[in-house]
Image (spheres, rainbow, N blue to C red):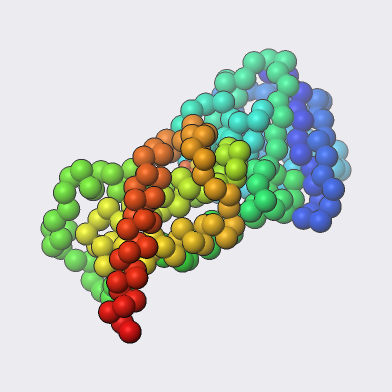
Length: 256
Ligand code: SF4
Ligand code: FES
């Protein structure tokens, strides 16, 4: 396949970026290559020509680590549903296609260089409450705390979030509700998550609102999510947040 590639190039966070076009560097692409392997080949050719390679983030290349998010033709992670950029194959495109590749676009994700953005704002949300406080030790007996099957399955669905940020990039409000809801509910649904449930909910939602826009239920997040996480989790989060307003006040009263 011979492609015309338009790629966002930006030398640093404070530099002005621009779209650069690559034609010769994007020839002879195998349909069996992944999207990142295609970028690797383009980079090899750029390096051979003495030019700066395109900076993009990647690690596992198996849809697990969440580092590889790219806007491809205006879609977060490209045209294949439920697929991270690293698992997208070039057979999804046709010979002669023009492809536009950009970084995530959101105020909370400043561009570091080319296609790489700073997603630390997502970490701030997890730091606020995405954990349980319990003394660790030897692994406990797996059946020590019975967990209803439905709760275990729903918690596993939420835990599939890979923190890629596609939900934020796809949202017209740059909201992080789907990410925050997933990180909350994989703990809030389980017995082990109950003691800190309402403090966790309030802390994570309040931190989310410091960095990200508000949800107006466009549903783009669910469509863009490579793990197909349901917006139902946002409803559970909103329910817990309302309850947290009352429960946390009661807890504060008990402490005083
Ligand atoms: S909810 Fe989905 S799109 Fe959002 S960060 Fe998690 S895996 Fe990525
Ligand atoms: S490189 Fe890890 S999810 Fe894509």
